[in-house]
Image (cartoon, helix red, strand yellow):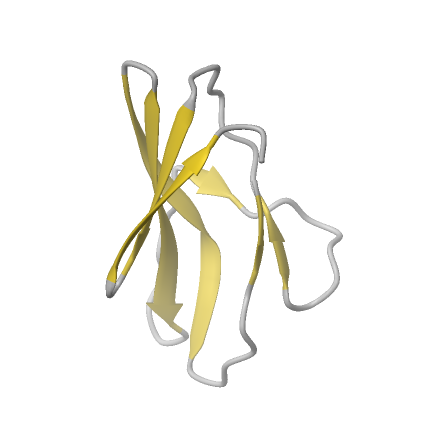
Length: 79
C-alpha cells in the first residue's frame, strides 16, 4: 500500500495498523507525536523519499477500507 505522508514538524508516521475481516481489510495510518514512541503492525518500508509511505500487508481479499480521522474511504483492492 502506497500513500503520501504530509511533512509535519511535531508528528511522524511509523506505519499502519490493520484488521482483516473475511474479504475486507481495514487500515488506519498511524500518526504520532515526535515526543512519543508508537508501534505499527506494518512499519513503513525504508529507503523511500520523504513524503512517501509504503507498507506491505498480507491480504488477498477484495475490499480495502482506509480509516481517516474524519471518516472512511472504501476502495477495491488492486486499485
